[in-house]
Amino acid sequence: MSSDAKRPSTDPEGRPALSPETIAVMAGRGPRVPDGPLSAPVVFAGTYHAGGPVGYGRDGNPTWAALEETIGTLEGGRALAFASGMGAITAVLESMTLGAVIVFPADSYMGTRAFLADRSRRGRFEPRIVDVTDTAATLAACEGAALLWVETPTNPLIGIADLATLCAGAHRSGAHVAVDNTFATPLLQRPLELGADVVVHSVTKYLSGHSDLQLGAAVTRDEALWGELVNRRELYGAIPGPMEAFLALRGIRTLPVRLERAQASAGELARRLSRHPAVTRVRYPGLPDDPGHGVASRQMKGFGAMLSFEVKGGAEAAEAVCAAVRVLTHATSLGGVETLIERRHKWRGEESTPPSLLRMSVGCENVEDLWADLEQALDAPARPTRSQEG
Ligand SMILES: *Cc1c(COP(=O)(O)O)cnc(C)c1O
Image (cartoon, rainbow, N blue to C red; front, top):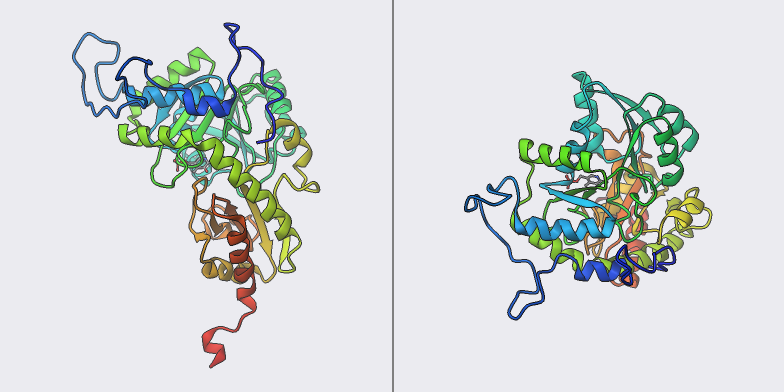
C-alpha cells in the first residue's frame, strides 16, 4: 500500500495516530497483564450469569466484541458483527421505513440485488436502479430517496464511484448513504471519512481472507442507526458464531500483508493481460487508461486485487480458461489467499455482464506462477481437444 499521507498525525486524545496496518495487528487485544492471552479467547456461551449488560448469547459475546473493536477502529466507526455479509446488509436495509426509496447500483453484489428485488415485489422498498459510476445520474435519482447504496469498485465490472461527491449530494437530497466496502477493505478506502453513514462488509472475503468461513459486519458513527442495527441483529438472529469471529479476527491480523502482495500481483497481471492477444478488455482501476483511474487515485490508497477481463471467443472461450487453470482456482467468491477466477455471466441476475467476462480475485501465490498458468489457460481454447485429435 502506497502511502498514508491523509492519515491524521494524532488521535483525538493527542497521541500519535497509528497506521491501519498497525491497527490491524494491535486492535481488539486484551489488557497487557501477566499471563493475559495475546489473542481474544473463543467464548462459547449461550447464556451468561445474570446481572450484566449482555445476559444472553444472541445479544453479545466477548469474541464478537474483539472483532468489532478491530473492524470499527479500521473503518473509523462502531462495528457490529453479523453471521454473514448478507446478515449485515439486510439489517441495514430493514432499518429503513416501509416503502423507502432505495437508489441502488445495477452493477452490484447479486445477493443484495436479489434481496432488494424480492422485498420490493412485496412493497417493502421502492428501488431506483442506477449506474453509480455516473455521478450526475445517481444524484438525480437521490431526490426523495431514503438511501443511496454504493459499491465501489463495482461487481463484476470493477467500476469506480466517486464516494465524496455522491455522499455530499445524497445528503443534500436528504438521503443516507450505505457503502459496501468488501472489495476495497478499510485499508484502501474509508467511506465513513468520505461522508458515508454506514459501511457494510462481507468479512467472508478479504478481512477473514482464507475462504473458510462466513461473516459480516456493519460500521457506523450514527448512534441512532447503530441502535437500529443492534435491534435487527437481536431480533432477526443473524449472529456470528464465536469460532468464526475468532478466525476472522486472526485473518485480519495479516490483512495488510496479504493485500499488499495481492494488490501488487493484480497490478502486474492487469498490465500483462492488457497486452495479451487473446484478451479484448481489462477492467482494473490501476491501469492509467481505465475509466475509474482518476477517481480511484483520489479516493483509494491502492487499486485493490480484484480485476475483470474479457477474452476473444465469447462464453465458450472464457469457460475453457476456467477449465484449464491449474494454479488459479475456478470458484466463486474472492478475497482469500488463493487466486480465484470465474465467468460471471453464468449467474442468474448477471445477464447484462459481458458473456466472456472473467472476474479474478488475485491472491498471494507467486505472480510468475499465476502468469504462467494464465498464459497456458488463455492458450487452451486454441488447443485441439482430445476428441478433435481423434
Ligand atoms: C460476498 C459479498 C457479499 C455477501 O457476503 P456473504 O458473507 O456471502 O453473505 C456482499 N457484498 C459483496 C461485495 C460481496 O462480495
